[in-house]
Image (spheres, rainbow, N blue to C red):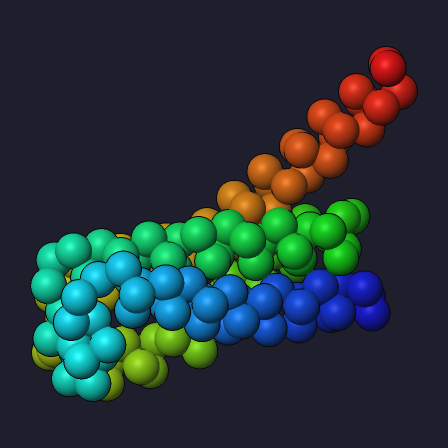
Length: 135
């Protein structure tokens, strides 16, 4: 139980840290992005970039959750649902500033992407263990 709680906490902290780092990349790569953040006046490329960084972050967070608690099938889903609960009020608050497809893409995929990241990490660990015993 303690390991599961630690995994969920690690996933949440990792999500915040990773998305922050990736956001610096968007600021550097997309002209005008930093200024657009202040009033959420993003171009289509910026919106896609933000959704892409959220997807990559969710996959990575799921992998971290699975690494910390490899036996827990619920931990990635709990972490994903907690992230959803954290972001839902923010998306309600800015609902009129961004298109519905943007909100739905982010919110609907959040928990499943965390779970997918955990599943991919689990498969990679199994593959690594199998190749280590074969070699």
